[in-house]
Image (tube, rainbow, N blue to C red; front, side, top):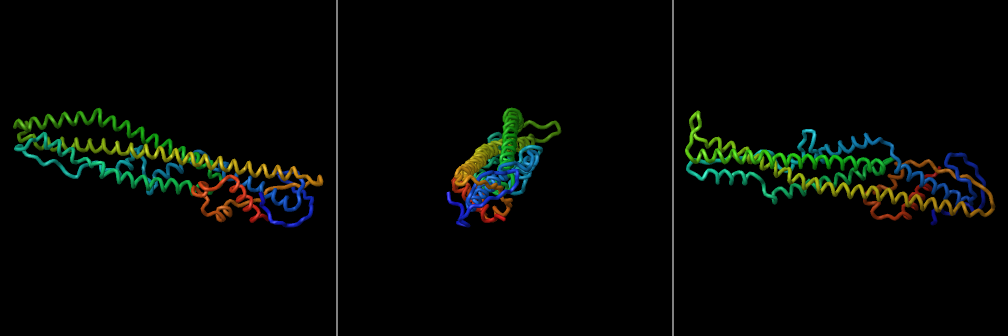
Length: 326
């Protein structure tokens, strides 16, 4: 690996006290190369070692979930996702008279008030596209920060835990609507339809028709609530896979950086072993600014890591160290 241009072709002896001391002998250019490698290792550690606490990362995850550009929370009295997919209440009420087949008209009305899949699926698709773009933006933002990889691992896991909670809530609420509320509403509608069809009158006088209208509307609301949760479950299952994929990516980048670190450490070992004269120098890492590195690599993020090898990354980091050396 050639990381240095020729500087001087002479030997030096240099003593530089530091906690990262490496005692070895170098030509001057080899000494600079060693410092560059050591500095690149230090830079990798800056990305990999957490600065924020787990609680701070959980707060970032929650803020992201509740942000206007994402807005998918389904707990703590929030119905952001199901409200995005479908309004809770029907826009129309049943219109029927005693001269019509009342129960048939009522059931047709209830069915008509639940949008078909070809209406809802494009809404889900749009939400998926928006959320996927936002989670990639979240990754690209935090991966460029000190401790970014460690933080992203905690942030993604916090989002994953929230998504599991949303899925569980949707399942529990769906069971409540299907097993309890819908059967009760079905029975009530049938009873009112039978009474209205028989010409029975309320105790206060008048037809049961308006009771049929109210019962049909209530059942339509329940059917929409069922549909809203079933579609939300589809979305959260999709998101479950997206989070798992992004967690795998974060872990892959962590492995890539670890491999690059090994490349740099092996190069350091090679430099140390080429002891030509038995003289010694001490190499310490340059103090590198992580923001300067990001400025040099503006595409440093998800796309960057998908196309670079450990060797190339190690070389890029060491070259950067040489560029910004004191």
